[in-house]
Length: 42
Image 1: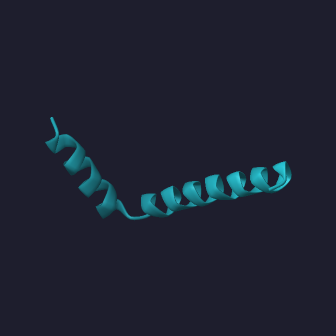
Image 2: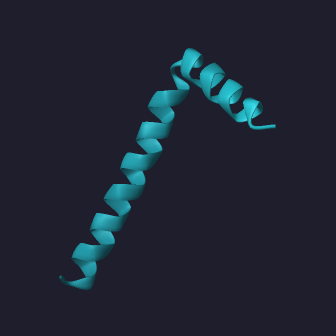
């Protein structure tokens, strides 16, 4: 692939990851569950 296409693909993947993270922050129950799972490791 051309470098421009690769760069566009990387930026699209980063944007999708950020959008997915933002969508998860809209669900407080998910964050509480994630914090509980993380805390149970200690």
